Image (tube, rainbow, N blue to C red; front, side, top):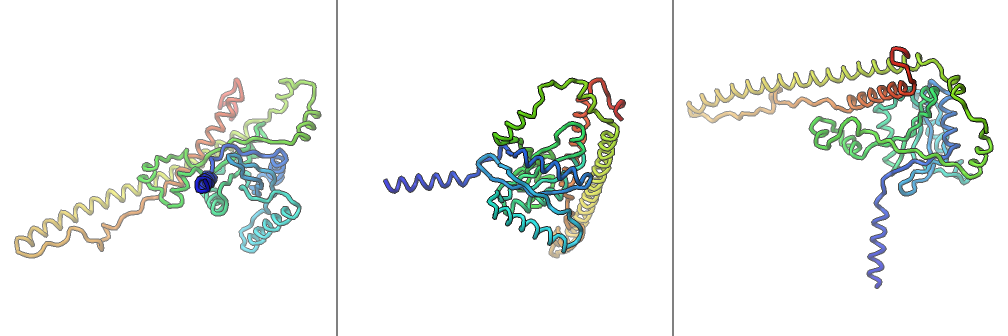
Length: 333
């Protein structure tokens, strides 16, 4: 009986260690207001902040946050920023407020957040935190009447390749990984206390909002669309440069293979003459020869990120046009 109870306890402990997949990020309304306030106050400068909360099963609860000081390119200032974070965590712990780090938030401009720096930040967080998310807020899109708030995490398959630092075409095909598999967007659920919900109900107006009221909020579409198109053109240029890198790589590889075949043919002819003379044949491979040195394949990570960014800009443009009935791209730009 005791053994069966011990076995059942070990089985339960083993099942508890297996982390359930993250399904929802539950954020309190006050935290969203803090994030929006911080990002809008410093817009168009990019800002970041810490997310605090609890990891409960398949739900990541975000109950508090605080902003980071604006970073400068100075080691002393970066050290002060780290000390600031530690001091903030200590103060929150003293007043019995959730001080468990569950990720960070950052602002962006027209969704231009898919960078190598974001991936490096994710890897740094995941060294100490089992699960973390990044909340992205876009003030420029929010000015168009859309709450541009999303929660992101890196996919597990991408993290395996990134830790191995192997983004060759062969590995990507082996893992069946494409540019859409880098980030995973987690649904966001806004949570408020019963007291806040009752207060918001009291603030609701009995007068229905008419379409005329919405039309007054419609601002000029030209600046928004112009910047989207400008960023899209820049990304297309970056993608073209990445493609040129791979074209140069394949040309160099083809040239090297031709040189290897010519050298091999020459060596075989020489070996045939040595055999006829009764001499030992020479090896058909010479590692010291530069033409046998493998050419490193360029990483495809940057091209994947640029392709992701292009798709994001295209989706923003298409989504914006879908909300403007009767208008086409030539009318808005």
